[in-house]
Length: 433
Image (cartoon, rainbow, N blue to C red):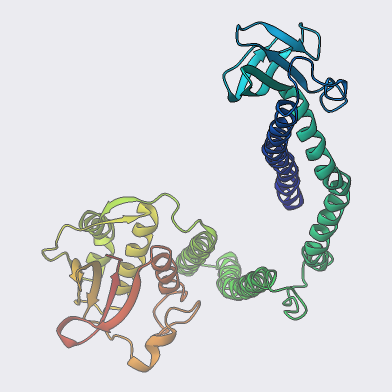
């Protein structure tokens, strides 16, 4: 698991180390340039002081160069014979042309300055290692305070990061101490500006969670209330069938018991479908679905129910439209729409199911010539357990709630309008383009 502290400390520590190394290298290079310039001037001055004197035998005071054995003086006559050397031949550099030059020596490169005077060649040389050592010492003296201060700087950085991330620990503690029923918003004041978006997002999540739990509790309460009536009716009908004395009375009681069981089974199935749709992933199992083919399948399945009421259930010429959808959920949506239309359309009525385009977007529509729903009552028909004015028709008030939930999961909109011939009800599900 990644750590924010580590993600901050490691780059900062590496950056500090690289800065110290870069400072040391830069100081060394700069010091070497300065040392070269300084020592080149020294070589010139040494050569000038020698050429002003008899060159056959330079004074003893100059024989050691700068007194520490780092400068070597050599003199050649006009015949190319070396007549003077201030140090052992093994350490002396080779002869070079007049002016500055870098020549090889047995112990490494040398920097030399040569000048012609009175027919003789005077050369003053110095090993480059002396200059490099001086530059390294200067760089070390410059970066040593940084090396000493680096642990202190790292400690200050660690303390600053720990202090800066403290609000996250406080927020985690405030949320962690809450119980499963404590869903109140976290106070939004007193947090750093960078933490405020996290607090706002957390409060939004808590609000949505509170609403979801409230809806779930309401759903459970409504489901229990809705199931209580049909189950009580089934129990009563079973008692009536048990006490029946004649075959006719028993057959009638069993028929009523069967109808009650059908209503309870349908209600339970719808409750399970609604619960499943409310907890399914938004786009689980989406694939390309042919709307016209899905309409034909549902109409074929519900045709016997329409025929029992002598209802003309038809599929007018429809455009073949394909939408990304959960095929099973889309079939449930269509089944609920067509089943509701058949149930509420009077005997001998008409129900049309078709696909069409609305403003360039694919849509499916179910229209009937039944009693319809008044405009004032259309706003609440998608709520759970809300039924229309015709309460005498068997139903649970969950069909359109399921339709709305499936449509929302598909990003579709559901609108209510007038049905066939200006009467009844038309329901249009419009999918995204």
